[in-house]
Amino acid sequence: TIDKGGYQQWRTQTADLEAYLTQCKNPFVIAGDFNSSQFRPEFQCLLNLGLTDVHDALGQGLNKSLKLSADGAFSAIGAVARLDHALVSEDVFPLDAENLESSGSDHLPFLADLAVRSAAPQSRLSRRPSRS
Image 1 (cartoon, rainbow, N blue to C red):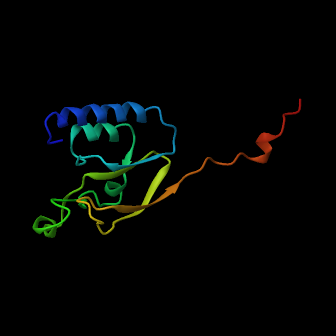
Image 2: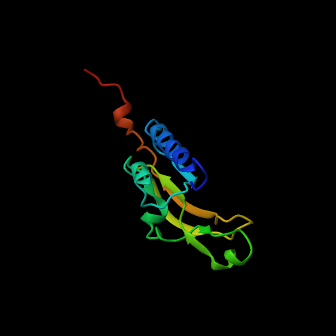
Image 3: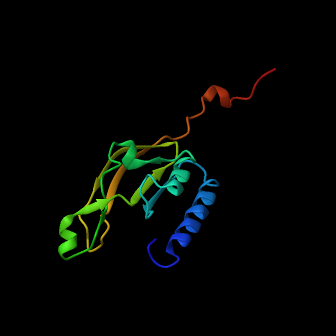
């Protein structure tokens, strides 16, 4: 978002993502580098769709995922912000999340354990044809 025209491109991509997500059927998970903290208005628009941020739901919303550099002196500082997120629809429940070791990127990968609520099975009685 700091490249010339990058912020406008990011806003367009975020708006396109928001429009796409309104068409998705539950349950679903969307995860990746959102280049955004949870506090930006554009990111809040995604949450306002009824999505839950996995790290925030687990009390880890301020847990960081982006380092200043992949290697060198600035990488020694460690992660400084969470820009990578997993968002889940209403039928998906975060159980745990943890950052993993970086493998050459300035972003820390993470692992999330999720539970998915399946549709309630229909009762056998409700599947029988009614008799008049």
